Length: 440
Image 1 (cartoon, rainbow, N blue to C red):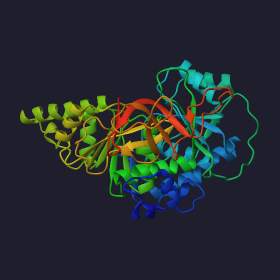
Image 2 (spheres, rainbow, N blue to C red; image 1 turned 120 degrees about the vertical axis):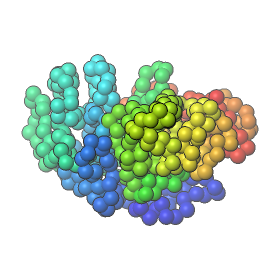
Image 3 (spheres, rainbow, N blue to C red; image 1 turned 90 degrees about the horizontal axis):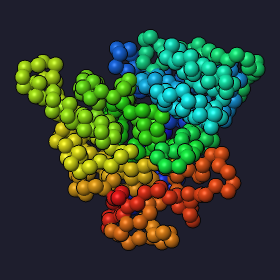
Image 4 (cartoon, rainbow, N blue to C red; image 1 turned 45 degrees about the vertical axis):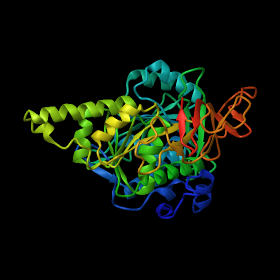
């Protein structure tokens, strides 16, 4: 399946989700996109050996199957993940996406929020790391009659989980044998809460086929290859981190270094030591990274060997921004820090990942823009749904792959975000004459 990236996926100068979908070879499940190589897939920063792509495929195909056979968790079940950030989390996310409807949650959330999320989503089980959760979560699992499934990280290999899943619940039916069925293209692989700040949160389902086309478009838009190595410090309970930092490296045969949390000084140590070529973050993180680089250079000038390491980002070729607007001034600071990198302000939403990205080689020549459409159809419309001319502000709408097809578990009389198949993003903006989007 890696050969998909060897062909030209652009049609008329842009990446169309519908066209990309038509060019994909037939596949049965996500295993088709895991490469059988001994190259690293996910690396930690604790000295353990990295998990390879071959190991990753074996884990997804074989080891993870024990969740079904031992604990009576069937195909289509919603499985929540409350695992600390690190190399184990992306591996479990991928395995869960392949077998179940994966529901990543923030492991740092307060108990009441976790209880509410588990109840709303209707989780059948929760994956937790042994020794990394408290009594409150155990009580919540008993209260909601949800299996608490412990995973034990390997002491030797980052990302690898020992084959000794254990489940805790005061009482549950005996395990029965389930088929080895994996999610097919039309199955729901991912369930996330909307990220909006107003109104009640909704459940967004993403089908396997929409995961695939979205990730392929991201990788093609950025030109990711097996030679690229990213650095992840982003939370992985949001769609951006999952698609960009977990799945894109897997699909392309590349690798991702997994930090446990965001620390700008540790970031610099990591990308230099691990020869990272790209990273994705949000504006506040970018600013701290730039500040840390300046501080380290000052310290270096004062004679510190520790800070004398390269903080010019010379090995990095991509710096990606999303989630919040990247100010032109911050973009320029990043360009001065990562002198050889392309700075990519992108745009997406939980309901549609991705939406826009600037082209490869973008030179920050359109300040404030988040780029051109890289997967769905994109339009700016009036209140009545009529297209706006270039330069005129209106409602930003999208349609086609990888847009969701509707919210989960919504009442029949709930208002729809769709109008004539166009999904309202909730944002205002305008397109210029070349199709570059500006969010206002």
